[in-house]
Every structure is written in structure tokens, then in C-alpha cells.
Image 1 (cartoon, rainbow, N blue to C red):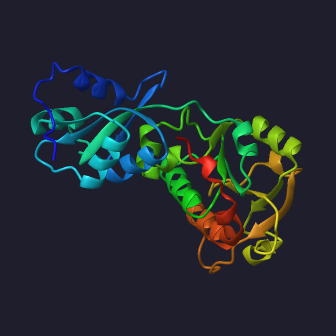
Image 2 (tube, rainbow, N blue to C red):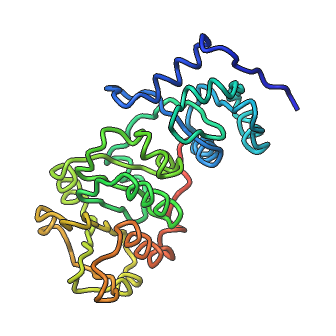
Length: 275
């Protein structure tokens, strides 16, 4: 095994690069921090351009990760433990991490090049929920996600990368205003199915629909906005115990996509992954 160089001083340019990428107040997000081996592996598979990957001197890096970096000619170095402690301070310290160049944002045109169902999140703002939905959508064949008024300014938000375990770069995710999203679905002709506790249809009714759908989910507090009402082709309810107030939106998305996986999984093209 090739011995890796070790960063032993804070004057190394990589240390300042890591400090910069962890700042919360960056106005322009050109690089992003990917933390832990599993998200790193997924971002490598997604074809992201890495500046460098780092391990901690006292913690062996997984062979699979090292091999993946070598195949992609990604530079890898270790960092002295004391420097890592000062970089992450009270944060959970990753076992390995890397810095990537943030790819060009996706647009609605990227969604047109896919064929599976689209997940539309209307006013969903909790980043943990969005991240869980990203992972589930990728796993169950969702072709893309439209985040409507999510308050996110970039999908490279560190919280979202963490919550999605790095899958946020593995399928098209479009940040849009409500007006932009309504305009896209009006022009595209993709049928929107809105999910509501009082819906006329059930999840089982969607199993036999052999066409691409837009699956519209609102926030747990306010539901979907009235602006989408004229576009929605139907409302769908997920049966639950009446004593329960509601399902978490990420759980709802998982239930629906599982029911549509027989159509979406074969339909999701490899081209949707960059690289």
C-alpha cells in the first residue's frame, strides 16, 4: 500500500480550504465538504470533481475508498488528529472527508431528459426531511426532485449533503419558486397527483397508472399550496390509523415511491448520474 502524506501544520493551504468550505455565511458556493466514507463513495460514483480527499492520521481509511480515489486520480492525504479536532471543534468529526467543486445547478430542462416520476416538495423546509427524501427517491427510482420555496440557496448546503448521505448530487434536484414550478408543470403536461389526508384516490390506485407523474407533497403543517390546485389531476390519501395526526413527509414519499417502483426503477436512465 502506498504511504500517504500527512498534513502536520495549519499553514498547509488545504487547512484554510477546509475552514473556508465549512463557513455558514458563504454567499457563493463553489465548493462543498463531503463527510464520511459512504457519502464520499457516492459522490465519486456520481462523477463529482474532487479537489482532494482527507483521512485522519489515527483512523485507517477504508480500502474501497482509497481504491476509488486512485481510479479517479483524486489526491488523498492524511491530516494530523489535533488539526482535525481544531477544524471541526464541537461538530461530529468525520472519519474521512473531501472537498468537491459544486456542479452546475440543475434546471427544468434536465428533468425533461428523464422518464420516471418527479417528486415535488411544496414548502418543505426541514432539511433533514429533504435529505431523507433525496435518499429514498434515488433508491426507489424517482427521476428528479423539485424543491419549491424550500429556503435553500444551493443543493450543496452542508446540512443537506449530510442528511442525504451524499445522494443529493446523484439525481436532478431543481430549486424553484412556486411560480416557476407551476409554469413548468403547466407547459410540460406532466400530471400532478397531490397527496392529502382527504384525497379521493389511494396509493393503490397509482400502481396501475403507466405514465410519468408529478408526485406533489406539501409541508406537514400547511399541505400543498392553492396555486397547484388547477394543475392537480387528483388527490391521493395514504390510509393511516385515524388516531395518528399525520405521517412525516419523508415517510409518505417512501410509501408512494415504493408503490411506483415497478415502473420507475427500470425507467431511471444511467445518464441521470453525472460523470
